[in-house]
Length: 183
Length: 92
Image (cartoon, rainbow over the protein chains, first blue to last red):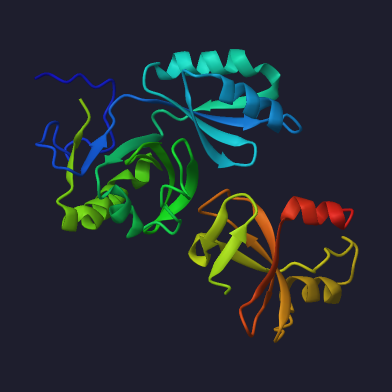
């Protein structure tokens, strides 16, 4: 199987391209588009409503007036162009696709694994689908989002990805967590 | 408990996510003030036993500056507000 990388992934050679997935699996997403949207002063609410009305993108709360917009379908350039055109002068859009690493943790024990390093309540009633938060995982700041029933997405800064992967592997050892690149 | 801080943007978080800068009641002196005034402002701090108001930054979360009012003896937290709200209240 031939994989063509546009550029070197931060976790290349540290993660197998393919591995037998156990019940709890950590997938390293190869291609993703991530854009930081920073609302201009006074436009926070307008930008929030524009972003939430767009169904093609996934919006992650980062700070008041600041979001990470994630798309699995679009290329970084197209997502950045689309958001810039959509928001115009009301927000600043910065492409982060190559500066961040996206990890997808799924499985019945995903919450138990994350609970070893994350200091927020991950019970389904407290942290619901579509919700996201900037949190500390072990000693690394991440953006954690619940995208499905027991499927979490983690966005981490590129240079911290290797260290976070090491921590997540340790946290998942008791649950036989498997790790591979996502196909 | 001071080990849990209720961030107005992120909710209840452990103190490890924050960085503490110190006294929030200080007012920056006039640029022409005497060296002694500047020395007091930059270096001299009270170390109160009891209620204390500090600047905390939520570095691992929303990265906003917060004003946390807490008791240094009992660790009870009375009030957490965003720094910009506090500055607005003070008319700065």
